Image (tube, rainbow, N blue to C red; front, side):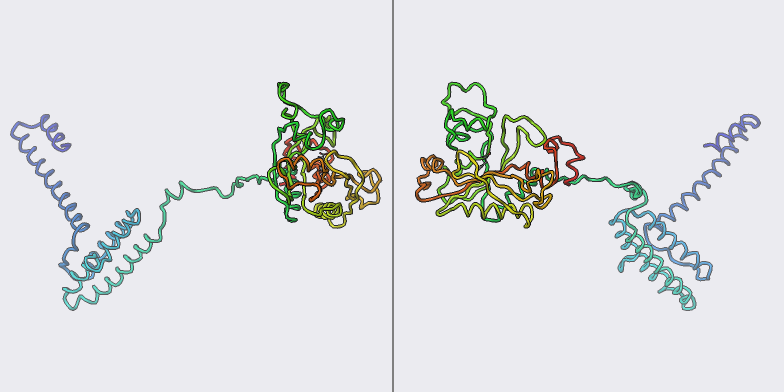
Length: 415
Ligand code: PHE
């Protein structure tokens, strides 16, 4: 069109109508013959790519070079356009397929029918072409993802990695688990009970009768608005884990060997070693012929397991309403080995827990539901220890508040 318009522009300026017609005709002819020869070339190429190999008409070196070069160019063109496994397999079939592959066709059309004097030259070129095509297939098979895909998932390996903070048990949880596992190894099971407890379980059945002065040693928060309930049913935050002794005995006949870890509450002013909320591990062992020496042996073993085999224990007379006799257990100072230091106030001993033989009055409460707890037939011991106190000693912590402050600089040391 461009040529036609150019011709007509020129014509309109300078030529007559006839001359203009002749010029247009000539231009159209030129233009047509150009496009005809173009489409002819394209047609020939399409045939080459999609269909069979053309027959060879000349067998001189230059003609062979050109023919083989053309086939190789096509193979390279095909290989360059491959994307995905299916395309690679299609390439393999198209070029190396044993029945209809293009190399097979080259061999059939060119080698087999060539005049004898051209066979050697043809064969050499064919033998050179085959590994080229096979190499293209190998490269495509092993090529993996293309550059764009690789770039998209590239990572900068020089950047520092994302650091994952390792979680860790809280030192109180860890100590609590350590204590229970010492007793679990002795055959004790592990139990739990409610933190909001009735007056009956926390006090009355533990032999603190209503109005008894022993209750003053364990003042606590009580739930409001329960004045119309009988005193024994009124709710409070438990002051110790001992009520779970009773809950356990009521639910199963003797023998019993159980440890009970849990949270307890007291109306105590917070200071460096006291907190109104803290943790205890309770222990209860009931069977026939349980004696004070069983209690001593068990706790001596437990202290050695927790603090090291060099630790000694000693038992001092004490008082708890629910044990008789009762004792406070001291261990030889783990800081000075018993010589006397600031930590043990120069005594060489540190008081750690309370214990005693289960009072018959407690068994009498249990026997109301489980007659097997007949104090004439069975006996038992109980003990209770503060988890914070043990953790403070084990880890050298001097402020109990550190356990509850949630300061990662403190807690991170236990990770
Ligand atoms: N319950 C007692 C306390 O909290 C500890 C204790 C438990 C003492 C068992 C003796 C036997 O102080």
